[in-house]
Length: 387
Image (cartoon, helix red, strand yellow):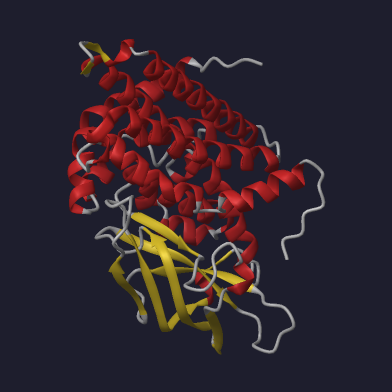
């Protein structure tokens, strides 16, 4: 198997790394402390072309693959995972419209998303249901004349309440109340839609500078032209979005794991203990060696899954391995970076502290590690029942 990046991929990775380390990394600690979404910095990411990478050229994108986008997200997360996750959520949501939306939806809503001047989101999770999409309660009622009324709540939604938020893809039940089985549709809901409001941003352990909040729909009326994909086909699209997001979260954790390793090596070289540099202590060397192995494991899992997607290989087991492997490794490596940092690692101004806090959600979102375990077991041929 050939592991060498192409010349173009090397240039892309180095360009984003230089930008992220120069413009993003120096601001990450301050943004985390203030819990502020960085509008101008996100738009700079757009100007660098990151958002455009996986979108078709006919829509204004670069027409590159998922693998190329993973390289860029990895380098952003190496500087600040909060900014990387805001980018990847908008990218995944926009790609849902690009893949399944009408031509009018693409032309009207995607140009500012692809350029990175605006941001978008997708809302599935509700206060009482996450991975169990069958438990969702938000409902869309048909009013006639092609109009629908949406009522319900969504929880833990990223990107919906920033000053540059453009739209949210909202999953709602569209089958009759007495239907034997729920059917769902995905509605493109503009941020200025009447009856659609955003709650106050959450106080979070990590991802403090990304936007996360609850959404409320109270007789939010939308036309049938707002439905993305087929009527009653929204649950399938949401699951496709969740599956796609797994590779992006894997890339986010990979970048953070690399940052944790970078920090640990730098600190071990600078810190003196027992009259000599920390790097000369064998147990420190052992921890850093373990971190390096874990980071490369995450990289191989993530890169393989991204490559397979671009090759049209449908391998849910590999995707789940990448998501679970990289996100769990991200937390393990960040924890080791805290340990190596000693007492400073317990302080908020230590980067390793932020890395550990940020990555904790990655093992939960877009299918928890427990869900991924079941999917991996199923890919191994085991009889797995999700009910």
